[in-house]
Image 1: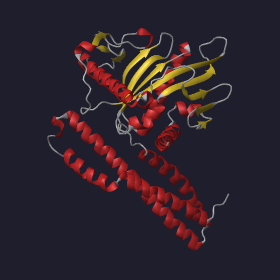
Image 2 (image 1 turned 120 degrees about the vertical axis):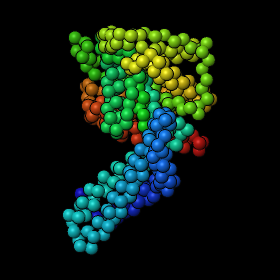
Image 3 (image 1 turned 135 degrees about the vertical axis):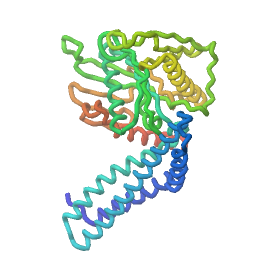
Image 4 (image 1 turned 90 degrees about the horizontal axis):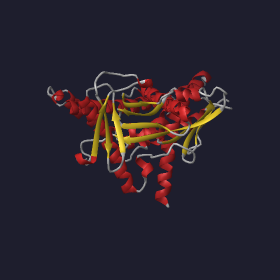
Length: 375
C-alpha cells in the first residue's frame, strides 16, 4: 500500500505533537542542568572516598546522559524526516517518499517506547528493582518454568545493558528452581518491571513426563523497589533470626567450603530472605538485610494503601490469579490476560523479548489508575 505525502505529513505531525509532550514531561532543560551538576560531582577528586555515594552519582549521570541523548536523537530523526518529506514532495521523488514512510514506522515505535517511560511517575518507579521468582503448582515442571523465567528476565536486562546481581537461588531436587532473587540495577527498573508481578502459567508437553502428557505449571513473580537510605525501615534485632550455612548449587553440590550463605527470617511477618552469591558472610548478611528491608517497605506501603498488589504483587502461583499465559502446545502463544497483548513467538519471549508486554502493562496500569480517579 502506497502512503501519500499528505498521509505521511499527518503522521509526522502527530509524532511531533507526541514528542513535544514527552519533551515537556521529561523537562530536558532541567535534565541538562542536572547533567552539568552531576559531571562536576563526578569530577571531584574525593568522589570515591565514599563508594556508595560515588556509585549513586555515576549511575545517575549515566542515566541522565542516556535519557537526554535518546530524546535528542529522536527529535533530530523526526526533524530530518520532515525535511526529507518536503524534498521528496518538491522533487516528486517516490523512492525518497518510501524512505520517509519506513522512517515514520521506526519513529513511531521508538517514540511510543519513550512515551511509556514518561508514564512511570509512581513514588518508587524511579528505583532499582528486586525480583523474586518462585515455582508454584506443577511439580518439577513448575521448578523448570521458574528457571526459564529467571533466564528470561536476565536476558531482558542484558539486552538493555542493565546490570544484574543474583542474590540467591534455591535449586529444586530434580531440575529447575524453587526460588531465585535478583536485583536489576538501573533507574526505573522497579517502575518498568512492577507490571510483571503476578502468576505466570506455562502449558506444554512435559519434558519430565515419560508418557509425553501435557502439563500446566505455575510460577509467581514478585517485584519490589530497592530500599534507599532515606527510607524509614527499622528492624529490631529481636525480630529477626539469622542462620548461616554453606552455599549450594544444582543437585546440592557445594559452591564453597565455608558457611558464607546467610538466611534471615523476620519473625513477625514470616518473611524469609537468603543471599549466597559467593561473597563473604558479612557481605551476604548486608545484602540479605537490604532485601528484607525492601520487602518490608513494600508490605508497609501496600498495607497503608490497602492495595497489596500495587507494590509487592503477592501471588499464590496457581489457578485464579494468572496474569500471563505461555502456551507451547497444542499451539504456540504468549498472552497477557490483563492487556490482551499476545505473540505467537514464545521462543523470543523466553529469550528476553518482553518489552511489548511491559509497555502494554504500563499503559494498562495507567488507564486503570485514571479510570479509578475519575470514578
